[in-house]
Length: 341
Ligand code: F6P
Image (cartoon, rainbow, N blue to C red):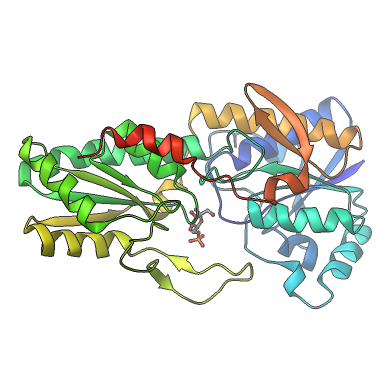
């Protein structure tokens, strides 16, 4: 078979590990050929390809980003997008696609599957919000980066008796905030799933100062105050209908200063969470996803996504990954609340 591989959406540590595993097993065990499609769905849409063989994937396991490039191109928002993809796949002699992506990329893959394109999905996102998989790769790396930042902020916050706010990624789901806040001993964690009371946050800040510790507040970019709205950096919608977030941390710092009289500053971790080398956990998870994805393709089990259930890699219907978002369970958030303040 001749199989196309693409990576779409926000990049994430571990993408190269998936590509390497797909190609290595696909060539060595099954004798398949591969074509790399550049920049997410833009690749098949515009016929942008690159060579993808064992030599091209040597040495990429620890490298962040994606050798294929990525984009947020939505072929369903482009005139004749689907026809153009089908035509380009046929011209390049492609039998099937392995699409590595999050809700948007796999949402497109799901629709294409119903339109007759043979496709296997691999779940990626630092946000860990894809449904029907216990974890996505990239999440563990992002959490470790955030925890390192929180550890560093603790010492400077204490030296200066400041409240320090760490704004992490997480548009609709607070997984990064919850895990990094718990692991980093935050004075409170604010997630998109539950609106927060600014008064309560100020109480926690003041009580943490009373214990001679300086408070660290971890807030997801999509967290919403009870007394306000989601803070957006740019309200323009991308081709999947998303606005650009960021700014809630700064808003919170100003409110805390005004209400408590304590100095408050914000660090926005932003794309630092997505860049650089994947953690060992993510390298292993991404590699296993890649190995199972190529086997699913070899067996012609189209319309499936590889997923982590417990410690097993299983195949689930592609549609189940995106039919709803995997958000933080209120009971899980409640567990963390005991440490607030
Ligand atoms: O989808 C993953 C994610 O990391 C979100 O948490 C964040 O809102 C978004 O990507 C930002 O991505 P970009 O700046 O590339 O549009």
